[in-house]
Image 1: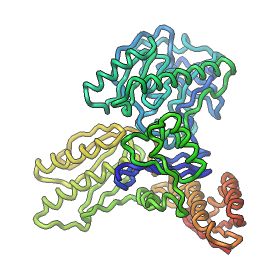
Image 2: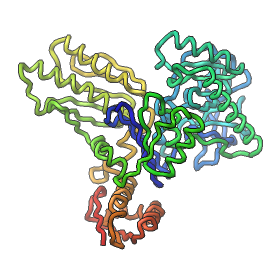
Image 3: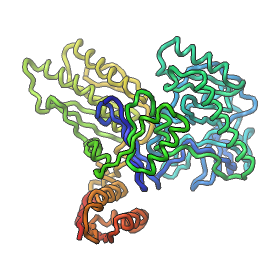
Amino acid sequence: MGVEIVINPAPEETRVAVLENQILTELYIDRRRDRGIVGNVYKGRVVKVLPGMQAAFVDVGVERAAFLYVADVTTSSDEDQPVLDGEAPDVPDGEPKDTDEPEEDAAKTAPRPRRVHRPIEELLQEGQEVVVQVTKDPIGTKGCRVTTYLSLPGRYLVYMPTVNHIGISRRIGDEAERARLREMMQRLRKPGTGYIIRTVSEGTSEEEFRLDIEFLERLWQTIRDEGQRTSAPALLHADLDLSLRTVRDLLTHKVDRLTIGSRPEYDRVRQFVGTYLPNLISKVHLYAQDEPIFDRYGIEIEISKALGRRVWLKSGGYIVIEPTEALTVVDVNTGRYVGKRDLEETIFKTNLEAAKEIAYQLRLRNIGGIIIIDFIDMEKEKNRERVFAALREALTHDRARSNILKISELGLVEMSRERVREDLLRVLCDGCLYCEKRGYIKSATTVCYEIFREIKRAGASREESKVLIAVHPTVANLLFDEERGGVEALEREYNKRIIIKADPHLHQEQYDIVMV
């Protein structure tokens, strides 16, 4: 089997796994209480203009005021833009991150007019109402970042109603196809509006483009009508949830199967596919077995492995992945591999295998930013070039853009990878309190959801009336408070009383579950 998408819905979180040849390559997680707002469109009110920062704060109805920079403010004098190549968002959002659409957030793809910016105090005044779109979620004490350059993603296109622009995904490499799509878009679009042609559009017919354009224009009109009816602050449009974004952005003819782990979610997704992608509805399947869907596909084990520092290679070598505040370091070691002929061959083969594994791990863990790879020193220039070529080739399968420099004399590779969302370690783990945050442990929320899944595994097949859970006090507090609804839902579903006991002797990641 080639590509399969597995959706594991639950009340507290939805998880989506992409498998290629039965190997987990991408994982997206959307937690209900941590759900991001990137892509949402709001009608906001300017609460403060800061000439010294050339920015403004906008009240959009969330906890903290949003930040609007002068370069993100549209004006009536924006000039028409030339037709440029742009990068379309290709995959769905996982968590609230630097950008929220995994190849690139749709709101951040909208091009800014090339102009000399007028001072912010000439563009905005306190009390003024503006329609904005979130491009970056709140982080720490900072509010979200917003723009007035709106962009609405569809199946084949990203619609930008406020700029005159046509962009084409760089992943469409055939020049004849690029020319065909560009010419078709020029004929179909309304003057003064903008579109980015997404990667999935390759081979698309004019009728499919027209339907997507009609849908996006209706959506934009709905947003405008809602904006006229409501006063600021107000939410005008929320992006699709993870399951439906997965369908919109990932379900193509190249996908062999989309498997969904619950009947309600299956019905909802099937209805969406039947409406917008009827020719792909045969690919949507319901998983109806008792064994949890991620267990059946071996995904839970792979997630646990993806949180470890050390990754073993088939040859017996290994790589070590060390995240730091500023960058990620990857170290390659021969480990148990001793080779057959000479040291240079042993090192070369280890590096060659490591290059492919590193590209895979960067994608699976969604590691972004600056990355330093310390390959084992190779004496022969030819071997260095072959390892570099293998790494570059492996990275071509990655949706996130990367920039890679050749191996230095010290065996180091400097590269950067687009930070499309928070990496898996930071999604599932917190800084370790036991070692003053020099390492990571699973967060209390992650442990709570593991406990929920463990109860579901055993609950339906056992006759006992009570479930005793011993957990670390931090986890117990979460189960008693914010996750109490999940506990009560399990009690109702399995007709069992769940008793939670805080045990300070347990590690935060440890828990004991006993059926009585």
